[in-house]
Image (cartoon, rainbow, N blue to C red; front, side, top):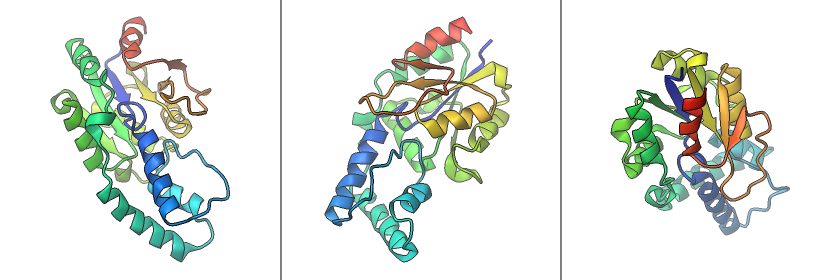
Length: 211
């Protein structure tokens, strides 16, 4: 019996991964920064992204990372536009069935809070955790192990909903079944390791009733 579900946020509950990519590309373009090759940063974290973008020049990397933080503040996430409209009705249905809802995201807590407020689901979420609270980011299992422990769930009583290769690996290493939400924009994300791929968020309800 499923007692809890742990959701990733970016790319799952909100279409932020696409927004992040466009915002980052706009910043790099303004800086006339030439990249060696295209990289998929879906599910990644700030440190890993900038280590990949600027692998050799530590001084330049730190400067660009700090400047980009300022750029993000001027170009914040429009969560009202990015939240999947299926989030609230899905969470309401899960709560009626007594299923606990958790959010485990690599984003900062302030971003998780903003997303929940925009989706109007703050009161429906039982638990949330940011990757910034963990010693190791996804694909390490730390965030999911912590979520399971804090929510009082065994691995056979819960599953994760993810989208990125790193997120899927994180949940699997924690011993969870993980269902991958198909990319909204057809991005070539490797979801082959997931337990299964779902087409839309509301498919989660069928999973709860079939497991």
